[in-house]
Picture 1 (tube, helix red, strand yellow):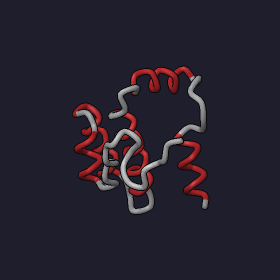
Picture 2 (picture 1 turned 60 degrees about the vertical axis):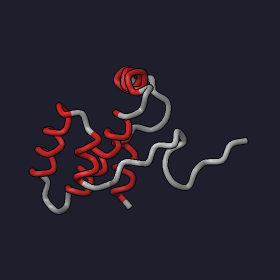
Picture 3 (picture 1 turned 30 degrees about the vertical axis):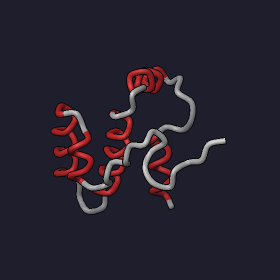
Picture 4 (picture 1 turned 180 degrees about the vertical axis):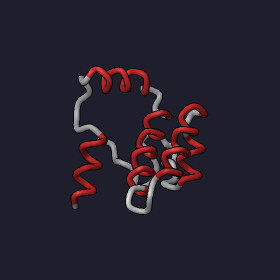
Length: 93
């Protein structure tokens, strides 16, 4: 049986900081500009949701299996709940 680390990822990587700078640094350059655009357009009610959504994307981008996962998400065959559904549920609380 393996234990889940209290800090970091199962692969030993530290999680991406949930800050604007941390997320921006973790994104590919083409995605970074879109992230800054969305953050710049977000008002005080929306900015937290924008940051959370892009943080999730940044975590996916650094996953070594991201191409396979991305293809499954796009095809609608990925298991689990979509990030947008989870975020909607969290924001409804």
